[in-house]
Length: 170
Image (cartoon, rainbow, N blue to C red):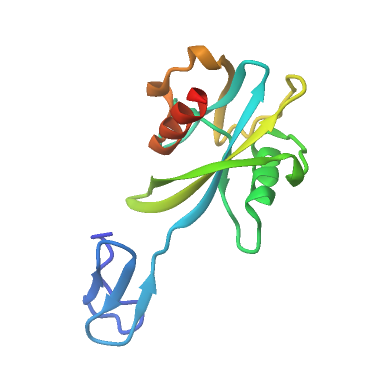
């Protein structure tokens, strides 16, 4: 956030960041809240295996990731799960088929800005393994991993590592 110095209202180099969520200008009445962004991650499970994508871009290029993404305005978390699985993998899954499991805070670094996110985790239990159509700009490949053989050091995001560790202990 230290790169943002100029006030978009008065143009002066007086924009201040409170190191949490607020930008304000010391010379005019400009205030901007950089609030936490909502994001979803879907644990797709088939029997004793979990489905991961391999990221094709930063952050975490080449590492494992759960399918998901950021929630759009006026969209529920379950609708986000459905939309993201369709965009990333070509899957059509009704929002009602996702079961909410819990959440974790995360930091998503993107183009020199750290975005605070609230990652909400959902479960989708697949009756069978499925064919997919990859969104190759985002995903290099996909893998099914036995839950007992999952290596958390290969996962791109700390929130997913922490959540999956606790999820698999249950």
